Amino acid sequence: MTYISVFSRDPRDVPTYGIAQAAHYLGLFETTLRQWVGGGDFSPSLIKLPDPEKPWLSFTNLVEAYVLASLRRQHRIQMLRPYLRRIEHDAAGLARRLFPLRRTAGADSPRVVVIDPYISFGKPTVAGTGVSVAILIDRFRSGEALTELADDYDMTLQQVEEAARYGLPDALAA
Image 1 (cartoon, one colour):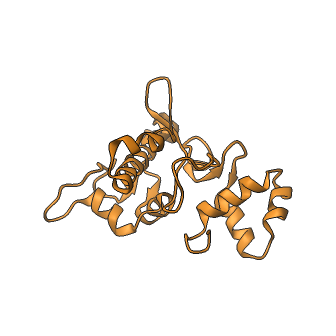
Image 2 (cartoon, one colour):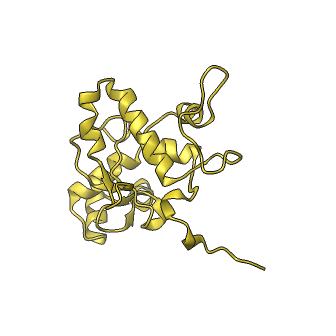
Image 3 (cartoon, rainbow, N blue to C red):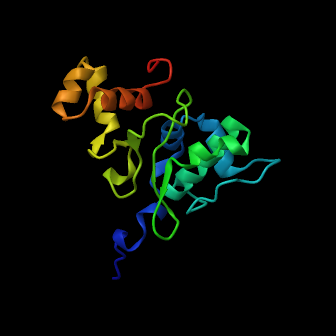
């Protein structure tokens, strides 16, 4: 029997994100992202999935969706440049890390939350710490104060607040 190591593939190309999860990470409506990856009766798909039979996006697809969402939000190419600066590239020019924004954030928002396919299986974390945004949100929702979380994870209050703004629904994160 032949085994293929999951590490033989570049983690950026591994289908990792479900449609709902990717839409949440990028602050998109799930139906919008589903249309972009699946197309429809009158429009082709805009994002080519690694496996057309399975609705899972790779990190590369996530970056493509981020760029499309940024274009959609800004409508003007000159306004897109600050959003594109939130994508870090490797030496070969490929997307390496993404500092995503949600609907309510501006392109100049701090780079606190990062999606890196090499850290925490590509789930959103607080940059430089490896701390999962989901864990911070779960603890906050269970009643812990943001200051307690900052102390527990040796982070600044600003880092925890930015992670909360990213991880909570827009209505709660104002």
